[in-house]
Amino acid sequence: MKFKAAYKAAKLIKVELDVTDNKIKSIRFTGDFFMYPEEAIRKLENELINLSLEESTLLNAVERFFKRENIITPLIEPVDFVKAIMKAVGRD
Image (cartoon, rainbow, N blue to C red):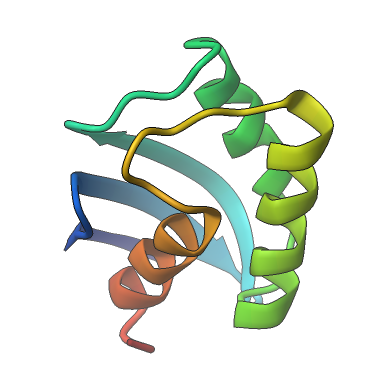
């Protein structure tokens, strides 16, 4: 099943995802935020593939990714990406 949403934190995060059996099968983030290094956004998307749509599971994965990859997202926190996903699937 396909979902999409726009979540406004300090910056806009748009997300489109495909979910099967409560797991993310594909996901794409866009918006007016910046992520450094720039190519890290695709790595983050890959990191979320096959994870269940449990808020705590997603938050742990995003926070681990940010720490491991030394990600910088001015004005945006890891939780904002998770909130965008939860909004898309109607769990906000």
